[in-house]
Length: 245
Image (cartoon, rainbow, N blue to C red):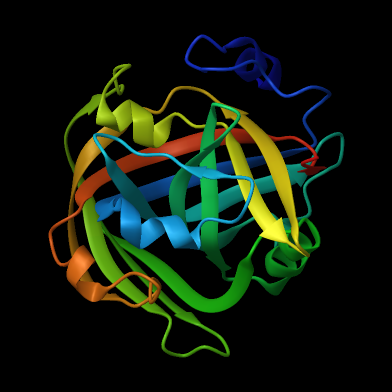
């Protein structure tokens, strides 16, 4: 299965990272909430060494609540307690040396082991009380960060419409098909390469009751309705964290 994923690369803008992948995750029932943000709002939030990426002169910010249903290191068995947890990501879009990727502002997770392990890998994870429930075709996702009680997210969502693959040279493709992520810690920039198959998406309906995980963005910027999309699942492969030089 993993060989098939690695061999499918035509949807990537750049080659696979060097060396073997080291970890896999399966993501399920993902909601993507995309908002355009004026460049001048976002530029000062990007660390040195990265360039803010824009589409039609707008920056974008995306929130993604979902479940990690499987996780394991390469050539290691799955450990039941460590294999699944909930996650809420807040990201924007950047590039370095013309390679497009993602910069994470925060990643909240429902199991402390995921937070501690990811922090060791320089990722900005936070421990949160989370739950996710399904009623018919509707998902309910709740998150409250531990130690920062104001960082709350509550939403209900469901997929609508027919599945589609984002076409190249469209906003959907620009937002979704990215295979590097960067973090900034200890005054240094770190890169993680990832790979997965093409995104198969559906439009989504969503009711956002509370969204308090982006205090660095003026609330007025996020007043408009976001682009709402759903993906049922994706298996992703991760490479070693590398320090940029």
